[in-house]
Length: 337
Ligand code: TXA
Ligand code: MG
Image (cartoon, rainbow, N blue to C red; front, top):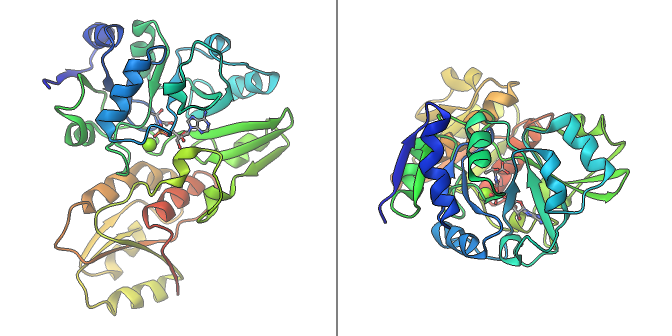
């Protein structure tokens, strides 16, 4: 397939991409979290193309992206708590799961009666959705199981030749996918996936925030977000998380005889020899989130390495999202030092 590439400089640049969507095609576009692979959410055929291009199991539902939270009631059954969250966090990096209306096809929701609604703040995403004139169903624009794409080079690597169009909007601001929430009742939010809208921020809007067990540990039950059951974000070389103080981690890494790569913090760089990448300062969870998937992608396909190690991140604020993606990427392999 010949893939059209668009470098965004102004709204008009997006017109050919919007035409592709109107004709049933699929387009990868930037958002403030990660790049998405979009199609018309009302067109069951577009959802099928998205699953095929990603190699994604079709029981894993797609998020529906809108230009404004005011459009949500056309596609799902909204509630007061939704509008409270929308006032506080939309447009922005949050997805809210609500009962779907009939116009959203089951092929988009993986057969579920609910749909995830998200209103991106990224200006390119916003203009693109507006120009399309329809809701845009979009998962992250990676090949299924691989780290989500946070820069244009990532989507070229994964999707060139597999989709109709790729839009270059530069690097994504946050670098981890949106926070996903569902309502247990009007006073209780369930956190299905942590992101840049943090537990601390959600608690300011709703008194009770319950964290789905699948966020924190290997979970053998059925997670509330079907996607959380898959081994995700994984580089091809096995990844292990090291949970310990500075000296223990440095000593452990020094004692390794195999060829290793390390994802560490700025402060660690002088103390670790061999191949290493910093994902940011030790207490700078925002930068860690921004760089995490690029670090994982740098080590992907490095068959000359035997193992990759990363340090256990903080679980505070957006750190919980970094922790969640890292433990999933490691297949929950943690060594306590
Ligand atoms: O930031 C993001 O959310 C990005 C950008 C492109 O918007 N999208 C994204 O989509 O991360 P995806 O498909 O990679 O992850 C969506 C997650 C999956 O774990 C899926 O199972 C869950 O959301 N999900 C979607 N709809 C759901 C629903 N109705 N009920 C429960 N979980 C749902
Ligand atoms: Mg994804």
